Each structure stands twice: as structure tokens, then as C-alpha cells.
Image 1 (tube, helix red, strand yellow):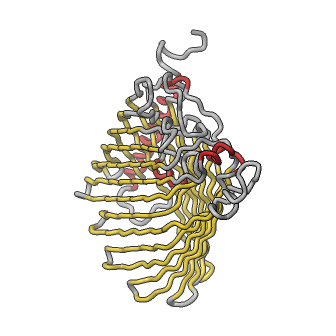
Image 2 (tube, rainbow, N blue to C red):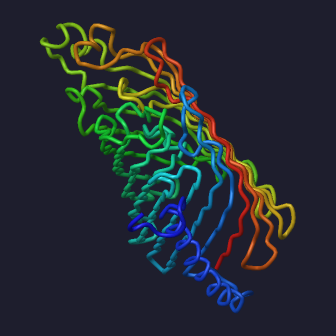
Length: 460
């Protein structure tokens, strides 16, 4: 065919992927020579660089649901993951920059989206005006086509979005020590969520993978602004009391009457305690008030005395955050976290949900060269309908009744460092997403996914 490149049946994406691999392999080869020459240097390096190359198998790269009427595509894959970092440590100022790239090619998909990318930019700058007062400005930007299950807490369903999504978090934080016992932490945050997947987070029709569509998902795009005030009172050298006030407001870009707009106020009491130099605990609990002010009183849509009258808009939910870390050996630790909170919904029929989240992490250094990193994440989101059937029909959204969504991810990576700058890796990632609603439960995107890989990682 005119304009084709390479032998028949080989897509251009294949050559694009090879180009990426060869380019980074060349850079890694040059970098390894530098790394070998600097082996044994002491102190923190201002510049860091990492390149990981992986070959693996993916049972469901498009996160196709069980309800798919065609065979779910599985594929081998090739992944290139370079990372660059810069750290500056001064007398009054600290700064850190980092960029991560992931490029992954799945040959069995054989479509325009068989090569997918993610970009992560992280920046932080801290300035200490005096020993009592400092300010930190930070930003974390993520663009990705592959899902990050932990972002379900931000209202992003853990499914592949072939046109990508953006999640950006910016913060400004002030730390002030009032006295030897009392200190304050004040923080402003801004979050932007923008997704180009389908409005209901479905990828139908799946009968033909070539027809996967990516229309506007303005119903799930929002901007979040918030402020948090934390007071810290030292009771003993091991124990610190906490009082936390947190306000967040969510403004959705475009939805029918902006009925998903909401604001939240959280008040918590808690404590931090150091049981041992290696064992640390932090916990807080309280109440979270949620105001779905987007459900405004409109007599043409919802009758007076219903939504918008103030009788059904504000809800009170429990709030809790518990976390513990145990550094039991050098370069080995275990941590556990549990939270209860109101989180934004990943479907456009609900503003938010009451969510229960568990995080477990375990890093263990078996020997100087052999290690394992494991993480386990579970999020259970419980949905209570904010509208009855008549009200949902009046504002043009589907009624689903009560329901729940469960997101689970387990990650495990073994590494063996056979040179000071080079290690081999073997890993397994498992992800599952499931939901059930009383009505209209057909497009729930339930799926499971397994990924296994072998690779090498060079570091500097």
C-alpha cells in the first residue's frame, strides 16, 4: 500500500515503540558508563536518573468488562519507563523536581491506541523565613491513558481511556510554630480533573475494538478548591494532639443544571504517637458535612419542599483517617492506612459516595541485593440515591437506586541488584473493578486484569 512502512501486517506503532526503546537503551548505555565511574560516592546526588525496560503479559489492557460480547483482548507488551529528578538543599530553601514517563506498546491491540503514554511532573519548593515559619509550594501533574486505581478517590473510574485524562494537584502550605508546644499548618489546594472518555465511563460498543469511542466527558470534569487548617499541640515528646478543619468545594464543568456541584466541611480530632523510634501512629476522626448545593430549588424541575429546599441537601457522615508505619529494619518497613470519607463519584448519576479505603505497603530487604515491594489498595464506595425516580427523570439523568463500587489493586515487585547501578525485576499487578446497582446495572464495566513482567532497571 502506498505510504506504508515495513512489511505487511506491521503497524507504524511498532516502529514508534522500537524507536523509543532504542533511544532509551542508547541513553542507558551511555549513562551506565557514568554511573560506574561514580560508584562509591557518598552524599545525596543533586541529579537522579532511572530507566526501566520491561517485557510482560497483560490479560486485559483495555479493561474490557465482563459484559463484552466479543473476546477480551490480551497481549504481551513492552514498556519503557525513564525518570529524571533534581534535588536542591540549601540553608533556607529546598527544591525538588521530577519527571516520569511511561510508554507501553501492546502488539495484539493493533489499533491506533496500541501505544499509550503517561507523563508525571512533580515540583516542590520550600522556603524557611525563620526557624518558626516556612512555606511550601508544590504541584503534581499527571496525564495518562492507562488507569491509576487509587484515583478512584478523586472520581476517576479505573478504566483505560484511550484519549487520556488529566489530574493536577497544586498546594500552598504554611507551617508556623506559635510556641514550643503549639504549631499550625495551613494549606490551600486546587485539583483539576479532566477526562476525555465517555460520560458514563463506558467503552461500548466492545463488539469491535476498533470502534472504541472517546467523546467529551464534561459531566465528570471538575475543579476543586479547598483550605485546611491543622492545629498541633505537643502533650509529651511522644504524643501530639490534632485539631483539623477542612473545607472543599467542587465545581463541575458542565452537567445538567450543575446539580453535581457540592461542598464539604470536615472537623476532626486526633493524635500522633511514637510508640518506639521505629513505630509511628497517626489517627483522627470526626464528622463530614456534605452540601449538594447544585440541587437547587427549581419549581419547573423539582417541586417546592423537595430537593433545593434545604431539607435533603446537607448530610452528615463519619470521617476518619488512621495510619501506622513500622520501620523494623534498615530499608525495610510496613505501613497500614484506613480512611472513611465522602468522595466524588466516578459515574454521572451521583454527586458523591461514602467511601472506605484501605492501603497496605510492605518493603523488605532480604539481603543487600535482593528485595521486594508490595502494596494493596481497596476502595469500597457506597452510593445512596440523591434523587427519586421522578426527580431523576425531571433533570434528565438515569435512576440507579442504591449501589456500590469496589476497586482492588495488588502490586508486587521483586528486584535483584547484580551491579551497583543495574538490577533485574520481576513483578505482578492485579486489578479488579466491580459495581452493582439496584436498577440500570448494565453498563457497570466490571473487569479483572493481571499483568506479569520481567525487566531491568538502571539507576544513577
